[in-house]
Image (cartoon, rainbow over the protein chains, first blue to last red):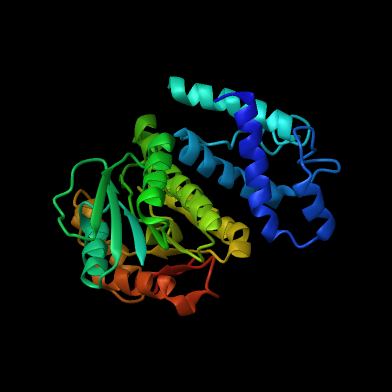
Amino acid sequence: MNFEQAVKVVLDSLKEGIDDTTEDSRKLAISNASSETRLFGGSGLLDSMGVVILLADLEDKLDEEFDVVLSLATDSTMSRTRSPFRTVKTLAEYIVLAAAEACES
Amino acid sequence: MRILITGSRKGIGRYLAEKFLERGHVVFGCSRSECDLKHDLYHHSECNVSDERAVIKLVRAISKSHGGIDVLINNAGMASMNHILSTPESTARGLMDTNFMGSTLFCREVAKLMVRKKIRGKMINFSTVASALSLEGEAFYAASKAAVQKFSQVAAKEFAPFGITVNCIGPTPVDTDLIKAVPKNKIDLLIASQAIKRLGTKEDVLNVVDFFMAESSDFITAQTIYLGGVHD
């Protein structure tokens, strides 16, 4: 899968979870999200629980849409400084790499 | 209900699978090797429970074919009696891999599925009275099961916001292959330390499993119920 596809998967997953968000400002931020949107840490859209739910949704989508079975949980996933969940872009880059590795193994 | 039972080829896992099938539930079972249990509602997979990729694939396959899992019963386990000084590293690691890693990987993957599908599921993990009694000769086995209990308590808290409960059953020795290699005098000593002095039965285990998976048990989580009156 390529970077653009990965960005779309992340944004789709974010937007599908919008109904579970109670804050109006967060709903608006999610609906306007782009590849530069901060996800986790700082002023990110997600708290740690949100990251966990997004992780589960993403794994599901990657399997359903791209037939890629992988676990996105890594030692760095929940790190506020190195986490691939920092922004939509870093997460998409991470997914492209992880998917390629999963396909090789 | 859709029930996933690990280690369903024989022993307690097989018994539970047969009982739930009799009741009309859909049962997904797994074991390292083939299973001769045949039933329209039974789906078996060969799976090493400590193999992360295999566990992910199995849970994903169930998600695709049946849309979710309502109950996870982490029954697969191995036992080994040995003095600490004479326990090979491979045995110690094998116990931790099967008993601890196996249970935790299934909890993690099934929890993801339950969260995605908004299923208020039940998870039941297997501990042992050997943990509560700190039995000599079972250091690694008891430690691996104590780890399962502590994991279950934390998982109960982390999964509670999603309506998922996580509990443990701690069976006494039950007449299965798991205790075949244990000398009779050791079993007798263990039974003597129970409040109710007899071997456990598969029916005793089913009784506790039924309690944990009952819809009315949605306020019961992070608990371990030992059979035979054993306690921490």
